[in-house]
Length: 318
Ligand SMILES: NC(=O)c1ccc[n+]([C@@H]2O[C@H](COP(=O)([O-])OP(=O)(O)OC[C@H]3O[C@@H](n4cnc5c(N)ncnc54)[C@H](OP(=O)(O)O)[C@@H]3O)[C@@H](O)[C@H]2O)c1
Image (cartoon, rainbow, N blue to C red; front, side):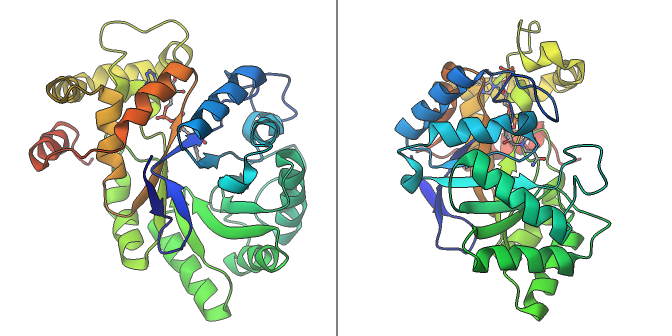
């Protein structure tokens, strides 16, 4: 495994992280049940640790809190080697204060995440989206207090447009609050929207990008070319399969490059994204151990300039 600094911090994270969004399939208290049960998820997490992955991402909202609980159980005995990231913001219930980033909600929710993860400090606490109803000053002061209280080590954000992140950096700067050190956007060959504004901001400000859906939810494995495999995300979410059909031409180029290199399409697409400017880590989703074994092969080599050019042409920025 290779490790890299998270943005301009001194914290080192693995170039590939594991996302735990889909872990936990018992009755959720809020949100949707995931696809992978606790036992299988713990096995995937343990195998990831064995392969040198040290960066794990979850959220208070995922699978009604069960995702955090599963991660908490799996990391017992390994916690000191790992970087644990979670998030706050998503709707947890019908109440007016059960979402967002008011001081009230952040202060309550951090306790819930610490309890479910069974740890005493969250390494990276991320705003899961923009809260348009709370002033950035209020949220950032609350996050700053959590760092001072030793409950959180670093803060990051997710799904922020570039202008909101730029404003948040300014608010932290003028108030001497802790600043966001990372941003978590959707970024892959099939979703390059961040390249217009967010990525240049991250390069300029030393913000680490930790990406979600780096394999396009499975599209970039090439598995949808012939048919929709049973049990795949495309089988459960028709829009994924439809998107895969539309992107067939690009996926053909990806597959050809993978064949030339003796790699798999997932490895090539992950290698492309982790080597883009400002990218610290790609948070992959894994529903079976075989995916992990495949995807881990994305690290330790680099695509040639010629292959990068061909991929750029096959998957243009839209
Ligand atoms: N901040 C946010 O708003 C946000 C949003 C979404 C996700 N996330 C984070 O990002 C993580 C990853 O998101 P994602 O699941 O969309 O990422 P992804 O890595 O693009 O897609 C993962 C899915 O692709 C399929 N797959 C992965 N590797 C494969 C392989 N080698 N061969 C065949 N199929 C393979 C599996 O789905 P199937 O087996 O089901 O086909 C797997 O669940 C989440 O767990 C979460 O932590 C954050």
